[in-house]
Amino acid sequence: MTCSRCEGLMLEEYLFDLDGGCAERWATSWRCVNCGQRDDAVIRRHRRTKPAAVVSAACVAPEATQLSGEFSALERFAA
Image (cartoon, rainbow, N blue to C red; front, side, top):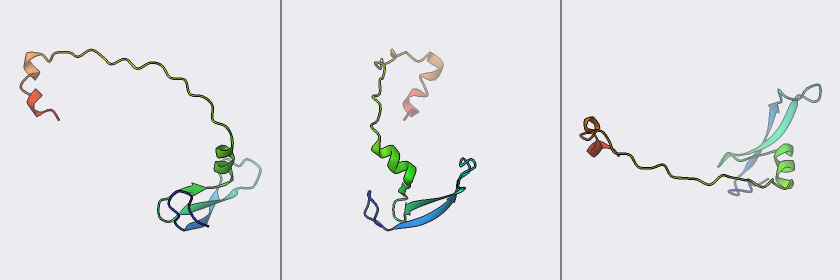
């Protein structure tokens, strides 16, 4: 199996599922040796579902403030 991100080699891993409840405790997953990309049944199922629309608030920049006299000497060292 090849990685969908970098076309690297994918290895099958067995993971202990702590959230499995009463079902199977061991889960199989695929991990890319090059980039670390993971692929398993849950990831594939989430990729197939349509993502919900994201609503964000308008970003407002804060007003610039003047430094007080005690910090003006440090201002030249700021990155």
